[in-house]
Length: 249
Image (cartoon, rainbow, N blue to C red; front, side, top):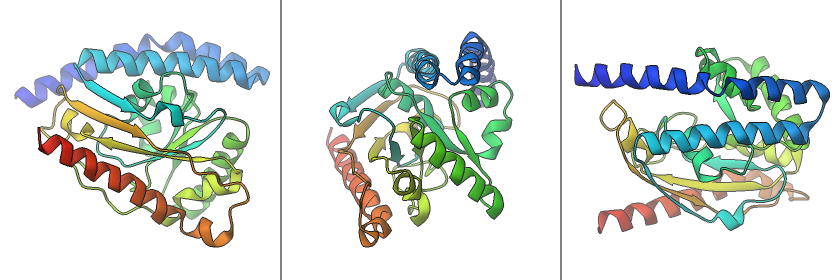
């Protein structure tokens, strides 16, 4: 019963919190229709930074961010491990000045209010069992990156729901290689404590580390083919380091 009450309470809060962001929808739509990508990105950032900050404050999340100096100017593909539902707002709270959309499951785009908002911020949606849809989504993502919009991808394909990483999908880096934008590995540690650990929202301590960008322009094919393994190792090594430090406290 406690879990049910907490989740209903969170759902109601989330609904009204997102409704308060609705004015940004019209501004984003206005600049998108006029072709002013820079102004559109500004409004997306205004929307996401407000939402991310409010969630961290509401649930008393301690967010330790490191590596902000590694965030590049212009568009990039941020590649991260995926521990829990909290990872999306954590990204916005950790990098409040950066426009980011997500490579997300189609089902997220169907959630009332949230679906409209996550579409507004230039996310793309993938149906993994539908090859034709996946190809179309890939092309859409490449075009967005070339236009100056940044994306976040979770190559595990699903939440780990705990401290251990799943294997990265090998084709996940192709978006960056095809568009010529840098890949920025990101390690998240502790976000599963916020929901997945107990099945309801609670406070948590989360570490968020931004690694040095990996340039993809002019990358030899042999190196491009090994990018998934390289990025996975970078993220996993830092994750183990952060977990080891936390275990010693």
